[in-house]
Amino acid sequence: MRKDGKIFVAGHRGLVGSAILRRLIADGYTNTIHRAHHELDLTIQADVDLFFDVEKPDYVFLSAAKVGGIKANSTFPADFIRDNLLIQTNVIDAAYRNGVEKLMFLGSSCIYPRMAPQPIKEEYLMTGPLESTNDAYAIAKIAGMKMCDAYKFQYGFNTVSLMPTNLYGPGDNFDLENSHVMPALIRRFYEAKLNGASEIVIWGTGTPMREFLHVDDLASAAVHVMETYSGDSFLNVGTGEDITIRELAEMIADVVDYRGQIVFDSTKPDGTPRKLLDVLRIKALGWSPQIGLRDGIASAFEWYKNSL
Image (cartoon, rainbow, N blue to C red):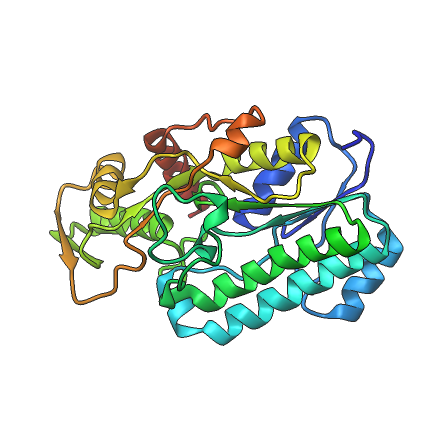
């Protein structure tokens, strides 16, 4: 990317978009543009077309999306597939038609089959059934990635796609009704500590294994890939290491200093048994994560406390 190029960060107020914006500015990219949802609704094609026609960005980071945890995905699948298909379709097409030089699409590791071999390589995409609790969201993300591939093949549009693992960090959504597991547990343990609760009940058995990447590490990967890579394959982004949900809960409890009992409700769904990404391709480009899990949890916890 050119340092003076105009860069549109779609979804700049979200967890991913805000981190990408911070990273761009830190790296000397000062010509950035962004719009809040009330200024530009990316699900409305005419509004997106007008924005691109007027602003003419050179580069686009498409991090805007409707996201949520297992409960939200299970309860509102129509919202997740509709809104994400609209957002990515409108932005990708308008970007191509208005001469954007390069676009990055941010996907999700949930695109892979529920029982994919571990660690998950990029070539395992669409080789088996998806996890049923978030298949609507996953199908939307697969469609976005395939749309990028199709526009590259048919029109020569320079697109790259990243598939990050579970993300967390400053700017996360801590709403207990629709957040992901990390921020939900941070909030619940902190509130339990404040309220003197003797125990916390967590959905599932605690045995599923998950990989977690600090969002600032993802942002560094996103900018690095936009600067160095224009290949045909999408890229996984993660740490290459995972832990059980039980281990995660115990680590968060330690960071928050909660001393009560942790109880797992096995009548509730676990989701995918394991989801560890193979990250050899992106590491071969010279990128690697820098933030350890415990340190990352501590930073997310401090941000949450300050946000209150």
